[in-house]
Image (cartoon, rainbow, N blue to C red; front, side, top):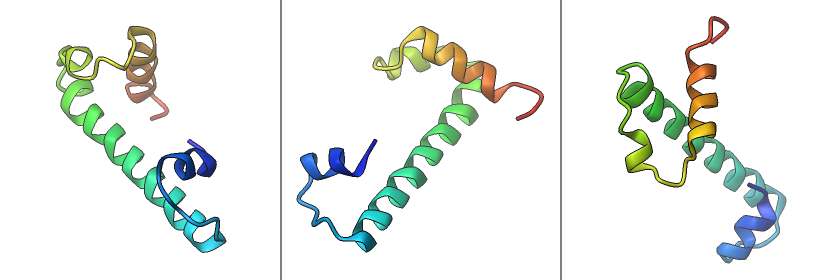
Length: 73
């Protein structure tokens, strides 16, 4: 997601400090979401995640699970 996408959705002035805060907040929320997915669905081997998050396609989910369960992770 880019800052311009956020500006299309929300009324945010194009100020450097606000841009940094907004993008940092988005990144923090995304990391939290990935942590939640990993703890609830990957480590517990619960396959219902695709039923709850219908906007995640099977290929994207498979790649996410592979990444989260890889040795380097």
